[in-house]
Length: 171
Image (cartoon, rainbow, N blue to C red; front, top):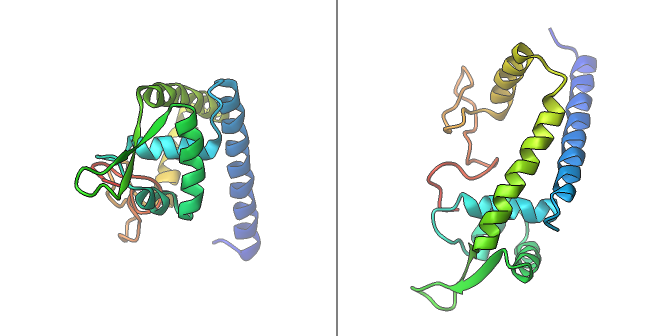
């Protein structure tokens, strides 16, 4: 049975782990030499999961930020040649954002940086501990990788409901 003290200690451990993950990912991102911030990397990953180039408002909603923040991110990524703005063929007043070839190359390097960070974080764990952690994280995230709830009572939130674009999502 958990107590408020044990729940508080567990919450603190989770917050410390989250900060450590962010710090290590930022370090690996900086070492990648791409000149991309963590927020820009997140926008690139979100674009990669969209079925079609999204509108700025769609990106803001997916990233859970104000539209102005997306404009700033897109401006920087566009200046670096990783994304481009393009008019919507159905409504030329609407601007859509798409990855460029350089953006796709950057994503491949970013994936490598993320994998290196994950390996560093998980290095102290045995295979069994990793398997247990994976099950625990699935329970906390609330869904399997394909978006199906894994919580025994069906209370989970599948992938694509806040954590990131799910398969087949058009942002």
